[in-house]
Length: 303
Image (cartoon, rainbow, N blue to C red):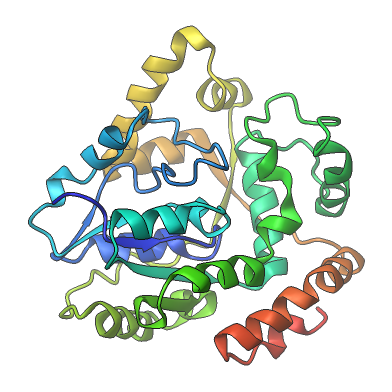
């Protein structure tokens, strides 16, 4: 059997890369390439640019190398907000386990907006205005010229974590669902490891040097970034192969990242914009508190 049976479904910008790499460092967990195939979230239309996945056979081929492993991990963060992905995952692997990483929705929204700028999907630098623009963008107006998926610009929906988590809970039994708080991933890796050990029934043996990633980066060379992120159709196959080679080799990936990008300070919204975002997302935070049983008073506090 080669189907995935462990799903790290989101949320984006909530420490999922660190958790995926931590899981992939364990001898009993197979992390295929790409780690985010996004195949089951067909309603969102997102697909990795480094591979072509046209069928279920293409998707399952990712996990052929993990047939001897106890777990085969699909770490697609689109699944949390997809209306079909979790149900499809349960149909594919009825005994699968699911992990959800949760972050303050305001911080997640801001970080996701900055990620969209880096990926050339967004051209509005002000996060408050970018949120407001969705009213016209959902009707096809004011879209960035290089935006590949307008749904990625629906920032309030992407940050509506309680709505998304509630949907997951409707399909996944509580004993097969692990919730991780973003702050733990960066500050208390031993606690995160213990949660994973207890939930998955694994021995210890994770590589905790795969730490929490906090740095934001910007492109050094605009034309090269455009060629990579939005290549002409004739160059797409070559770019796809290059991306696959770079991403599968940690040393090459690190060197390429250093050459093509530079560390950039995290851009914080103004206090007024942050307060407005908090008021828009406060109901989500309050529902998250009810769903998780966590004390999220610090998420609801004004900056």
